[in-house]
Amino acid sequence: MKPFTTKMSSRGQVVIPEEIREQLGLVPGTQFVVVGNRDVVILKTLAPPSMSEFDSLIGEARQQAKMAKMKRSDIQKLIEAEKVKK
Image 1: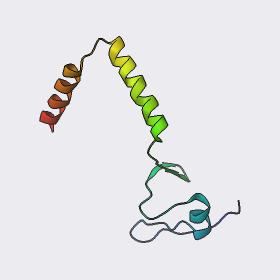
Image 2: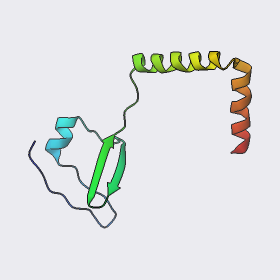
Image 3: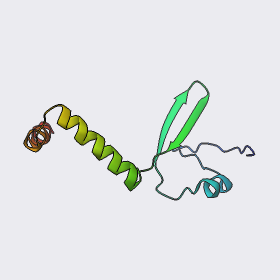
C-alpha cells in the first residue's frame, strides 16, 4: 500500500484519497471511530454485525439472562425505567 498525503480543511474535514476509498469500499455515509494519540490519528470503519454474528450475540445475551434468572418482564421493566430517565 503506497502512502498518500491529505490535509485538513478549516472545518476539520479530511479527504480520504480515492484509491483508498475504492480499495476499502468506502462510500458516502460510512461511519468511523476516530482515535488520536500524540501525532497519530486512526480511523476505523464501523460496520453492523452480519446476521450470523447478530444471531450469535442474541444467543449469548439470552444465555446470560437465563443464568441470571431474568424474565422478559424484568427486561421490559428495565427498558421502561431507562426511557423515563431520558
